[in-house]
Image 1 (spheres, helix red, strand yellow):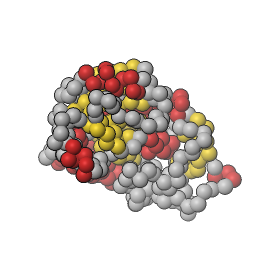
Image 2 (tube, rainbow, N blue to C red; image 1 turned 90 degrees about the vertical axis):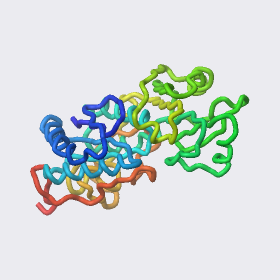
Image 3 (cartoon, helix red, strand yellow; image 1 turned 180 degrees about the horizontal axis):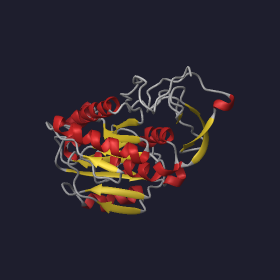
Image 4 (cartoon, rainbow, N blue to C red; image 1 turned 90 degrees about the horizontal axis):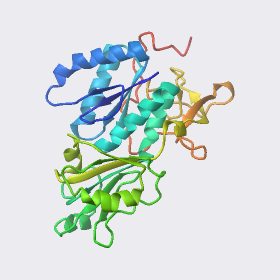
Length: 314
């Protein structure tokens, strides 16, 4: 079973959670190594989920590299998300529920596809200080007029002007009918959720959560209504497909680069090198490379030391 570790000021369901704060990096390192070591002893693998924006992403990458080097293991992998806090919370919860059923490599592959299956965004008054979504010039100019915007980050980045005629953004083709909707409306127009967002998404359950510490930094304002919705269960993710073992650590994977040992893979294998992995849609197999919106900072394989590595020549 893989442990899902949530790094950052994000509330969510995971095996563990470590808040990232500056400038306490040096003080955090011994505690982080202790936690990773304990998780490896119990679970055998750790998938660290973290925000891939601002200083939080750089700090998380540094800590993960430190753990892999200091503990001499390739059983620690990082999955960066360029998603707002509530969406990361949903992703961490789904990965935690799925972890007991699949291998670490399969879990990492599912994680890279989650941004395509999550609806995430916010209703904001202005987009002037929005940094993590491309803002066209007309939207900057419209920020000086009465009204607001609905900004979506996933499954695609989009900015729509709100008006009486269009009180909610058109989300386009939704991945699925959301079964769960998380809303943080402590600092914005909470009534917009009931009159516009809920009818638009038709979510099964609606949960209002406390304000996330990192949300204001992501949206560039303290007045926002953040939302995130997921429309699938762990069982829906367990659709049998054909994958392959990593050529170095033999972890079942479906990405061009193994998330754990960092080895780039050769062409698609044939014969007995094929193994089973889990995917979201039978008609839409995993891409041969991670999505463009997700970086893989662990693309170089570590030096083969420790009991979790192997020499491909043997």
